[in-house]
Image (cartoon, rainbow, N blue to C red; front, side, top):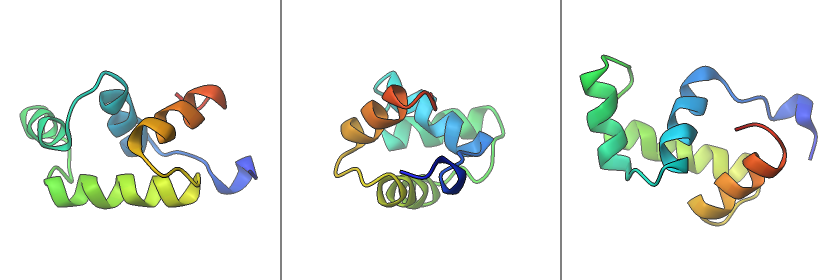
Amino acid sequence: MDKNNTIINSYEKLILDKLKVALTQKEISNYFKTEKITPNHVRSIEDRIKGLKNRFKAKTVVSLVYILSKDGYI
C-alpha cells in the first residue's frame, strides 16, 4: 500500500473515529448534523466509506478500521 496515495483528510478521519466507536452511518449523520459538519447526509457518509474501503482494499467496515488502525492512520 502506497501511503502517499492514501492520505486521509479530516472529514474521513471524523467518519473513521465514529466508526471506531461502533456508531452506525445513521448515527454518524445525526452527529454531523448536530455539530454542523457537512456533508452530513447518510448517502454522503456511505459514499465516503465505500471510497475508503476501495482505496485500502477492505471488504468490510471492520476490516477498514483494523487496516487503518494497524497502519497508524487512526
